[in-house]
Amino acid sequence: MYLEEYYSLLFYVGFSLFLSLILFLLSFFLAVSSGDPEKLSAYECGFNPFEDARSQFDIRFYLVAILFIIFDLEISFLFPWSLTLNTIGNVGFWSMMVFLFILTVGFVYEWQKGALEWE
Image (spheres, rainbow, N blue to C red):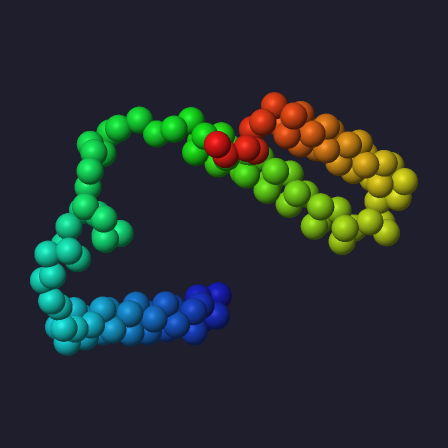
């Protein structure tokens, strides 16, 4: 009795699986493939490998990546805050001001330490 409501969903899932299988098989059989040695190499960027893949990287790459992730994620808190600003009141406003102050202090600290300089 209740299963009749799911027939359209079952038809949709079955049709999408059938269509994706057909498209996959068509692209597999009809696609032109050229075995270019550069394309088949482990390094597709066009440069010849000059060192071992397990060589050490400069710590500045990791530092820039971590700083980007930290500040990118912290700034992403501003979007929901700005959308709900009229409903959260003064407590929400001032808590975000404290958050932004701490974020600014961290940014000034890393700027003074030279973490943003690339020499």
